[in-house]
Structure formats: C-alpha cells, structure tokens
Image (tube, rainbow, N blue to C red):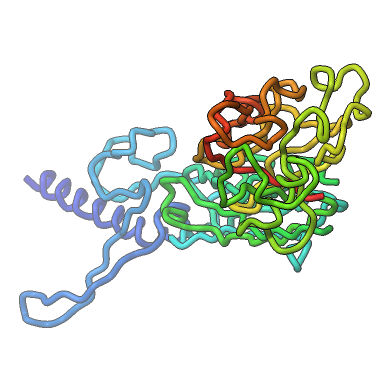
Length: 383
C-alpha cells in the first residue's frame, strides 16, 4: 500500500517537473518561443496567474509527438506526459516572421532614364524577410516595343531570400529626331508564404529615349484608287500629299505613302532586291537600318535592314483590326501587276494591290487585288 502511494506521488512529481522544465527552458528552445500566462479565478474566488508552455512548430503538450519526426524531438523515451520541443536549424535563429514582407527594388539610375546609346537599364530584387516557402516575382513591361525584362520571373527560396537577383531591361531592337517613350515595369508575387501573400512590389516607371527612329501612321481617311483630289504631278505625289492632309498626320515632319507604281516609286526590281540591293529603290520611303514606330497605339512596328526593306514577322501589326491599304506591291517588294492605272483610276474597270493592316507577315505588302472603286486607307512613313 505504501509502495503504491510512493509511486503515485513520484509520478505526480515527475509530471510537474516536466511541465516546469519546459517552461523554464523555453527560452533555450529554438522553436518554443515563450511561456504564456493568463489570469484565472480559483475556487476561493481569488484571481491568480496561470501559466502554460506554448508549443509552436513542434513544441507540443501531448503524450506523443505529432510531427512524425522523432529524430528532432526531445521526447522522453517512455512517451510520458510533458512538454517536448523539436529542434530547429541554426539558420532559423533570430528570424521573425512579420507577415508583411517587403520586396526591395534597387537601381543605379535615380532619374530612371535610359538612352539607346547607354547600357541596358538594370535593377535588382531582394526580400527583407525570411521565407518558409518559395516566393516567385513575375515581371512584365507595359510596352514590349520599348523594353522587355531579361527574365519573366525570379524565384526566392529560404536559402537565398536575402540575396539580390538582377534583371536587365532590354530593347528588342538595336535602335539607330529623338523619340521619348514612358513605360512601366510591373511586378506581382506568387507564393503561399504568409509573409508575402498579396504583396505587390513597387513598379518602376522608365523614360526611354531613342535616337534616329522614325514614325508611321495609318490614315483616318479612306480613298479610292484615284488620288486626283490631291495636288501633285503623279499619283504617287498625290498619295503623299494625302498623308499630310489626313487628320492622323502628327503636324510635323514629311511623310510619304507606302505605295508604288513601278515608275515613280519602286522598292525592288528583283525579289527582295537581291540583285542590286539598295540601288534598285526609286523614291522608296524607308531608310536602311532604322526602326519605325506606329503613332497610335504607340509601338515599334519594324526595323529595316541594310537594303532598307523589312523582314518578317513584324514586331507589331499596323493595326490590330482593319482591312486593307493600297500598296501596289508584291510580297517580295517587286511592283504588283495592278495599281489603278498609276493611282489615277477610281472605277470598277481597274484594280490595285492592297496589303493587310492586321498582318505581321508578308501579306502586309500584298494580300489581294481590289477594285479601284473600293475605298481603303494609306500607310504614311516619316522621312
């Protein structure tokens, strides 16, 4: 009988010792963070403080560990009652999960300006808070003609969250008066980590200046194959004057129509000018090795080569919607068979070559012949 009492007293003492040991050693436990106390009313109606061991990420008050990882648990070998704390790696020390992590964005150019004769703009991304789960930052540009990020995304892990990752903004062309474009680099996060859920990194707004680029626009007006309503000695000159008379003309600069007749304006006499190169041009409106932008919506459309013709596909179409415009070309830059009698006939008796405004392949030069009585737009090119 006495032996049983001694055993029970010993068991109660052991359980009490285990609970107090967890509380007193809690500061030394890398995962159990603190002893939690609260005020309670005892049987006598008096208020007293009651404390207990709070288990976090492995510190459990239970008869057995639920972590499933017995190799990192200070559990009593007999599986007795008490507090047992799992160990944490040294890399987790002094880490505070704030729940409001920040993405640090750094760059060397405080004016956020970039010119085509300078190195590409570069910035870095870095997290300010330890993470448990991977954090992916997606990166995009509001104007892919002016600049695109070198990567579409970067991912941080628990091992490199504090290491900067560098991203450069590259122009899709080697750019050759000054042309200024403002655009923004936007970023979003994709993660299940509590510190970075719904965190939106600050955007970067860039001012990008390009030199010696040219502009082009699609006319607001439509025309039959007869440009006699405009001044000029030839149908080509009259079409050029139609450009400067149009409501979409920007108000400054000389513009010529992307239209040929094989006499007063020619791109190539041989397919793609392979025979004599640039010498095959007659009054051709494009320059060699030059980038051409459409004015609305603002985007780089094409870059010409050494022969002052452009290769396909184009970087952007002239219009996202729209039908045709008068060209008089074949798909290989040679003059087409039909040009509305050198752009002086607007009747159903003749036809003229038209290109597709929404195309990015060679059908932008020639899609089909249409009756000259039909009304289509012009594409006008800055000189």
